[in-house]
Length: 556
Image 1 (cartoon, rainbow, N blue to C red):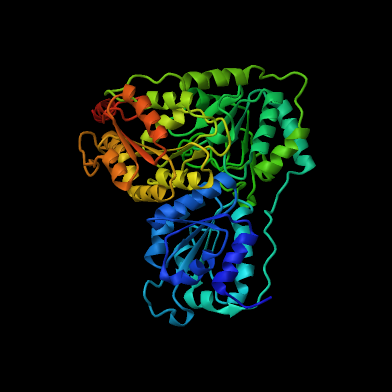
Image 2: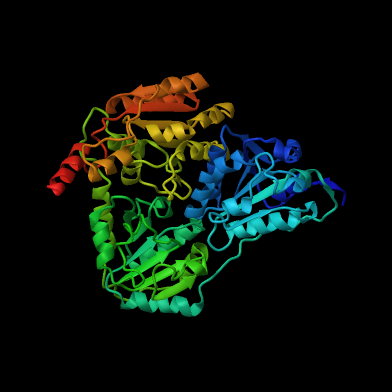
């Protein structure tokens, strides 16, 4: 071995652990790492803001199951990245954020941009630490990969003092990381089979992370053997094919009432991988706490999550991949009491996600999504941030393949554009669509420049209703007619795209959308399609005026 700088040792560890991409905003606090990256095979994406860079890395972690890698500079660089960290935390996504830090000898003087990263990020990470010695870099990076991926995946933050990165050290590299796997016991699979045999109306709910295509295929076979209706959790629609005859729909915001009733009437719920947190549980009303009110089999890779909110009848500490492998040995009874339930649930889902009801105005977002559903390849990656515009995507698009959905279960705005850019950087051959509201887009719209820089032909669909629509909807429900701080005056987003060197289109009617989309694809450029939505078209089910009128009537 020979002496290497701390920066070189760090980059070598990333390559050993299989990292292929890194997203960054450069900073003088980690110049030694940037120098080491100059000759490395790691593909570096230069971003325009740390929030977008961290969200790109989070998207990479979602799609691959491997830690997304992000580098930012100290102080404001790190705090700007914090939304991506929070998304990774709530979405159970493996992510490692490296933050430049002041030199060790300057600590606790409030030096330029100094922060205590353990304190700042400690509550929203699985581990936040700082490297004090270049010789410990292999050890700490190895631990970071293990922590980020094992159990319930999540983010790790590592602070990098400038002088540690320039120090020379003669140290051995770590071995490549391996994800710690947890498996169900034979007794647990037998217990599960007995419970299924005793049930009259069971249902499955899939969520969380640590899935792969093989696990999904195995769960499909299990569902087919048992004629089991299968629902997916909030923004986890890629975990079970929507066109599969056992698919029952998703537990998102404003879900199919018939799906909610099916779950409420069930006598056995099999929850695999998910936490059933606020959104999928309908604000914690779907099940009792701590007693769910019906037998619950909860499968989760993190033992601390089992029994944390809901007390399961059977708790199985296993990853979805390991659990689904064990399902190959679970067999149905000779006669299934709930035979036909899956077909009934799927028919209900098809009706719910079929033809959108009319809305106010000349542009219909539901019809736009159904048009895309017919046109896009099954492996197209659909990305969105937060806002009412996303309800049209979740209700009317049908996800049929794994790794085709990027959407923050944490409800973070500004996610769709950087997620799409990160996805297209990883998978340039695939179609990648970003949906954004007018407010959502301008939270990270500057990274459209990143798409242009790397010739990433993402297509951004901006749904513009001139307001923070979700907040306005809630405002009308609670304070009807008293509009405050929710109105927006927007730029010409098509012109914005052209100013960056991309392709831009303006769409005012539903009929204009299809040709505009086809021209965007044909351009081969990053594109923005600026769709003007009537403010009244606030949800697939109700107009803004209806919500206001209902609230006024309730007030008497």
